[in-house]
Length: 205
Length: 360
Image (tube, rainbow over all chains, first blue to last red):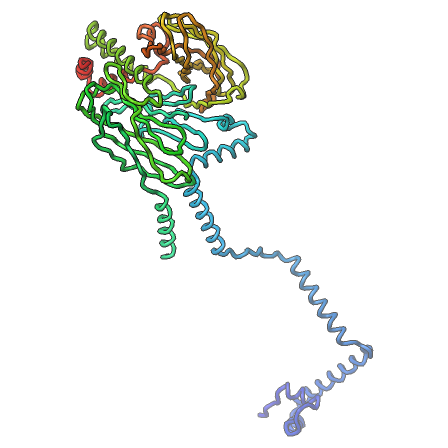
C-alpha cells in the first residue's frame, strides 16, 4: 500500500515552492502514483487559469487605494447594521459615594438648622413662604406692626422685639383663655386632683 | 461601621453642648408675708439655638409667714432682655398663717444669644389677703385682677351657701352639674391681640357694638364701633357715662363676637384707665386689633361692662342675678372659685363641697 503525499505539499510542489530534497521525494512519488499525479496536474491547471485571470486586470490598479475603499465599505456596512439593530439602553453605573456625600450634607445642614434656628423662626419662615406661595392672601400681616399677645389651647404667648415668651402649665390644657386690648393674654388651669386654679399671663412691656 | 458610631456620638455631643443649666433667682423681700420653703428647678434649662431658649419648669413650696389669711398670690417671671413679663397667679388660695401651699411655674422664653448668661428671676408681684388688703410692688397691675377674683369668689360662695340653705344638698348638686355643663359647652377660639397701628388694618367695614344692658352697672356704655375684616376686628371705640355717684378710674368691657353660624364667644376684654366723675361721659378708643387663629366671618359684635374700679380702689362686678337675667351666663366664664368648687364636687362629692363652703 502506497502512502500518498499531503495535498498541501502537492500544491507547493505544483508551484515549485518545495525545498529541493523534499521536492525530489515528492517528484519520485508522483511518478509512481496516478492519483497524486492527477491532483498535481489539476493544481497546475488552476494555477495557469488564475494567471490568465490576473492578466485581464488593468495594469495600473492602485492596490492601496483599493484596499482603503474596501475598508471604508466594510465600516459603512457595519454602521448601517447598527442603525437597524435594536440597541440595548446603557444604564450609567450609579456610585454610592456621591449619594452618601449628599445624604451627609443634608443631615449636616438639617442638624445645623435644628441646633441654631429657633422653632419659632422656622415657623415664621414657613408662614412667610406660605404667604408668598399663596400670593400674600394667607399669613399675618399685622404681626410686624407691633407687639402681639396670643391665647390658645396651648397657652399664652407674647411676641415683641424679636423675643418671645410663652407660658403653659406642663401638659395641662387651659379651661379658659383670653386677651386684652391693653396688651396681655391670660390662661386659666385647674388641677384635676386638688382643684387649685392657676392663671398664667404675659404682658407687653 | 465604627466611623458611623463616632459620627453619631459627635452629633449627640454637639447637641448636648448647647443645653446648659439655667441660672435662677427667687427674690422675695425681707418683709414678704410669704417665705420660700423649697424650690425645684430640676427640669429647667437653656438651649442655644440661634437664640436662647429658656425652659422653666419649677415647683415652689411656700409658707404664709404673715398674720393674715392669703386669698391669692401673683409671681412675676422675667429674664433680662426677654420680651415682656410673665406671671403665674393662684387665685383660689385660703392659706392661713403658717400654712403652706405650692405654685408650679412652666414658662418658655426666647431671648437674644448676646444677652449674656441665661437666667430667670421670680419675684412677688402681689399678695391679696382676706380683708382685701394687698402686699407687693404691683408692677403687673395684678392687684386689680386679684381683688376681682376675690369679689367673684365671695359672690359665688355666698350664692352657693344660700342655695344650700334653700334647696339643700340636692339643689346645690344640681347647680354644680349645671355649672359643669356650662363649662363644658363654652366655646373658645385661639386669638391674638396686636397692639399699635391697628387703624391701618385691612378691615372691610365698620360694625357697631350691641351693648348688653346691666341695670346695676355704675357705667353705661353706648355707641361702640369697630372695624372688622376677614377673621379680624380692631380699633374699637365707644362712649361711656358714669351713672353712679362715685368717681370711676378704671373700667373693663367684655367683647363678644358672633360668627356666621350664630355662635357667640367671648373674644377679648377691653380695659380702659380713665377718670369719670359722676354723670361724666367720655370716649374710649383702643389702638389694637383682634385676630383669630381660624377663619371666621364676623356677623355681629356685642359687649357689656364686666367690671368697674372706683377712685377709692373698690370694685363693682356683675351680680349673679344680673348674669342670670341676661344670656351672659352662657358666655362669661365661671369665676376661678366656682371652677375650684365644681372640681371638688366632681372629685370628692357633695359632702366635701359642703364642708368646703363652711370654711369661710
